Structure formats: structure tokens, C-alpha cells
Length: 381
Ligand code: GDP
Ligand code: MG
Image 1: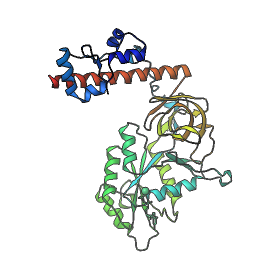
Image 2: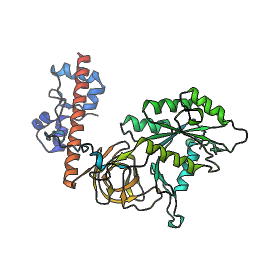
Image 3: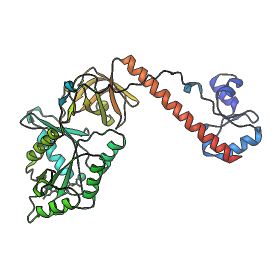
Image 4: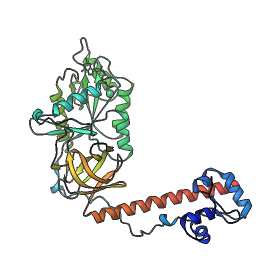
């Protein structure tokens, strides 16, 4: 039910004239106030108003929506780091492939091998990504959610978080529809592919046939004279998983993946949630700088003073360098998955950025509404 101007005036303890000035769509003749949404979604009402008062209705911002910020107060990424500041960083890997070819089994097997220190008794948690450490000390970061949806979601948001796609192909099944789709997506994103031929423990599997049909789809592995690495694994029996991880570190070296571990932190939010035990939690994949306790971060409409960092195996972490995923506690407001993370100097600065972003989204909403309303009014006349 719509309220009248008088109703609103009483609630606000203001005089009627003030309500007319500040609330939009007030029809002076009938004392009826229409909400913005009612008007946008119901041109019939617009027609009624136009008939009664014979005037057009203009959108007037409510007092709480008045945009004060003029100067751009947003946080922006730092300029590119000088080459001498760059250090090698681990690859960030997304596992893709046809359904039932073993993506989840492979990730579970890799995650378990990553819990090195069993005595620590850490509880592995799904935070969106995890790291596997080799005996050589090198690490590889695996994004936890396999498949198309996760890959395209990250890409759609411009995150560009994935360095390498591990294409899982079951040797008994060979190349299937989603295998081809995965190849297409990786190519489109310009992300190199590393093939994991899975289920080699199964009797009578034909690996050559799989390699040949991959080649037919443009993925020519080294065995056939191409430059794509292929590793034969069994995710179920945990065979050759270390070879797969080593191949990925080699791939990273070939790609010369580098980042500046100094300076302001930059990254991307992989997951964000309200955890009943720990409160506001978000996983950040660090892409530049080194994340530490006490850092002040802004991301989307959220911000944090980092209270605690944890790895996927539940272990407290003191520092998170480039390519490492960490669960971050200390959010005042939660960001959303895909938001860019930027470090700022102070809490004051974080508040300023939040205020600016809030005012910008209000302004956008107002502009959208104004357009929708003038369209609705146009249709009604
Ligand atoms: P996803 O759909 O790609 O995530 O595939 P899953 O990981 O759910 O695996 C599908 C089925 O294949 C499950 O029954 C797994 O146990 C089985 N599987 C996965 N990897 C292997 C493997 O290396 N060898 C065998 N024999 N079975 C496997
Ligand atoms: Mg699965």
C-alpha cells in the first residue's frame, strides 16, 4: 500500500512541504507518494499520476543518497613494478575436463599430499585454493573449484587468475565434448594447457589413441612432436602426482611467471562468506606484494584490517607472497568473489574509499532509475 505525503511527514516529523521536496513522485493533488519501484514497474500508475496532476515526474534523490564526493577517492593499482623488483612466482592452476574424468579425485589427492606435517593436525578446509609444496621447496597453487563455471567466472570478472589449465582426460574415455570445450576456453583466454591423462590404472587403456585425438583438436603433446606437456596419472591410485606437479613448475619456468613481492598488496577474492565459527572470512589470492597481519585491504564494497591469515590446511600463516591463497579474517564488510583486492595506507583511507565507492554506486543506481522512469513516463503518455 502506498503512503500519503501526510503519513510520511508524520513518520519523519517534518512538514508536508519538506516531504514534497525530498521524496520523489509525490502527487500533490492526491497526497499519494509512490515508491520509485512502483513507478518503474507499473507504467499504469505513471499514467494515473500524469492524468491527475498533469505534470511530469522527476526523480529527486533522497537526502541519504545525496552524492557529496566530487574528487575521485577510489583506490587504484600501483603502476607496474620495475623489472629488477620482479621475482619468480608459483603457477596458479585451474583443473578442467569432461565430467567424470577425475577432476575432483585429482584435486582431493593433491590436497592431501599438500598436508606435509601430519603432526600439526591441521584440518583441511575448502577455501577456494590450496598449495602443493615439492621437496625442492617449489610450490604450485591449485584453484579448488574445477571446471568451466569457475574458470569463466574468474575470467568474466577480469581476474585473469589462472596461469595454466590442467586438462584432465580419462584414458579409457578419451576426448569428449567438455574436453574440447575446455580446450576452446583455455585457448580463448590464452592460457597454456598441460594434459593429465588420468585413470591409467585401468586395464586396457589406450594412451596413444587419447594423444592422437587430442592432436586432432589442436593439442599436440610432446610425444607427437608438439610442445604440450602430458603426464600419465592415476588420481585414484595417486600415481605420478609428483610428476604432474613438477611438470607444472617447469611450465611456470618456461612462462617466466614473475611478480613483485614488495610494495602494496594486490590480489583477487576467490571466496567470501560469513562463517558461523570465525565470522567474516574471505580467501585472497595474492598477485603482488606480500600480505601480512595488520595490512589494510579494500575489495569491492568490503574492507579489512587483517587479523589473521590461514592456509588451506588450517595453519596460521605469517606472510602470503605472490601466488599464495590465504584465508583472511578481519573484514569489517565482506567483499564478493572476483573483487580486486588492494592494500591501502590506513583505516581512514579505507573508509574514504568505501564512501567513494558507495556514492558512485548510488549515483549509478539513480541514473539507471531516472532512465527507467523517463521511459515509463514516455510509454504512459
Ligand atoms: P569429475 O567429474 O571430473 O570431478 O570426476 P570424479 O573425480 O568425480 O571421478 C569420477 C569417477 O572416476 C569416480 O568414480 C572416481 O573414483 C573415478 N576415478 C577418478 N580418477 C580415477 C583414476 O585415476 N582411476 C580410476 N580407476 N578411477 C578414477
Ligand atoms: Mg567433480
